[in-house]
Length: 377
Image 1 (cartoon, helix red, strand yellow):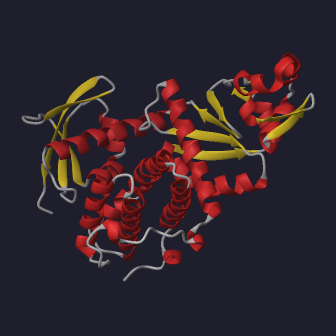
Image 2 (cartoon, rainbow, N blue to C red; image 1 turned 90 degrees about the horizontal axis):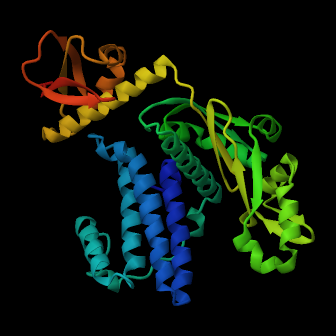
Image 3 (cartoon, rainbow, N blue to C red; image 1 turned 135 degrees about the vertical axis):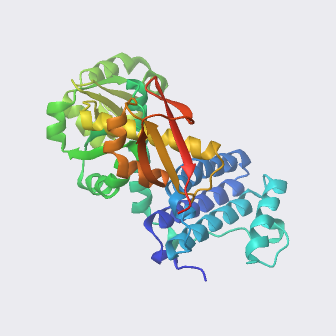
């Protein structure tokens, strides 16, 4: 039986909120004869929300062997998304979406229609749209993306854990929303803490600069451009904070929005900082020996998972791992033995004096051999 949406996990309710917002959006685009906008909206939903966020975060729910209520909810939610995408995409991708619909319906036989083109176009269910849930998940996605860009800038892999992300919050609502998704952010960007600070604390820690966006302002301001640009450039820290909080300001009689300016943040010692719209994120770059060791353990997990895949092992197969004595990172691996074993389904990690067979792997440019074999347990 279909599980009631209100009884499903939050992430299921979020993707169904996004799905209904998508139905509302594409319905309006179709009515305006805008198929290109329809395609872009569906593409954004499928790539960014469904595939890169929902399915990726729920993959363990799909993998779990036992057919639990949680697993059923995940499958039913994904089915609804795919079926709805097939129906709303059918006018612009008739053949592929008909195949998708038939493949889905063949398994469940939920609908009598033999083709997606014989079904009704989906109607938006306003009761399933939770705007607060959509907003806070978007914040989580935005923070995650910003931290990833900082890691890339500093050439720090996502598998290397870091201590802290610091985020200035401009109002109580944003603080509540980020607090609600803090654990998800920590998990996604691989940090131990998410610290929220108020505007006053941020002013003492984070230095911001502002400059006009000539592309948006030029056509609008004409001869007043120079005067307004000068006023924007001379904004104080308090002026910048006010613009970020309110989204707009009056400058020399003109209404200026965040789109009309570019706000930059200066890195502070030991941190790297970036801003995007109203959001600023600072990433702590300080690395302890414990963090380094956990990073090595995560790299080792990645190599073992690749070996499992190359060996043709099933997801549920248990394995035994052998590494030679005095291998590079032996201490890091053994000190994180329980964590590694749980991630790669290993019964034991054994140190042997010699390793006759095995595969060479490399971590941080240091090669060593490792052997895995399936166990009978």
